[in-house]
Length: 160
Image 1 (cartoon, rainbow, N blue to C red):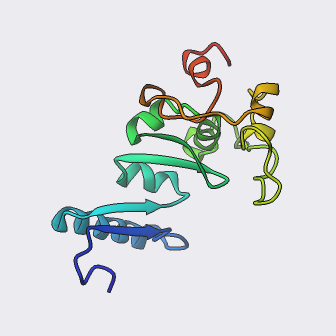
Image 2: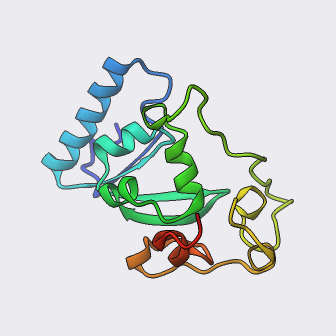
Image 3: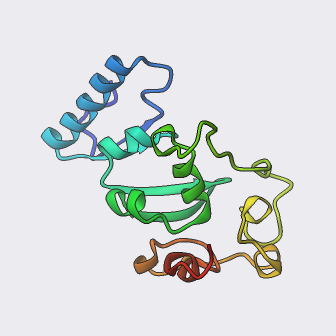
């Protein structure tokens, strides 16, 4: 029904959640084929980084409802710029360096208990007083449009 009127944009919110791998692949193939055949845009909302890697061209990463990074998919997987993106990717089983997968400490802030500064600051290994008091603005595309005070230092390895 959603594509009967040949929309210019299809928004698919978690279209593969709770599906087995075979059905997942069929759904993703269908979405990509429809996108290509009908020339429509496709916004795929998912928490599954495998789905992102297989189907996306550009990726926006959100944390607590706020965009924290935007890059081409290959760049995001190769050089994530925001600490949250890095933590997400490090938690993927295929990137595991030990038997225990890394986790992100703490909890996502609720709608009414947001930190004053960076939303990720209570959980970020790089957070300092600046991060806790002043919300960061997005950096240039060169730095993945990441919303982090220290994206340049993180990218160059100054902060490790």
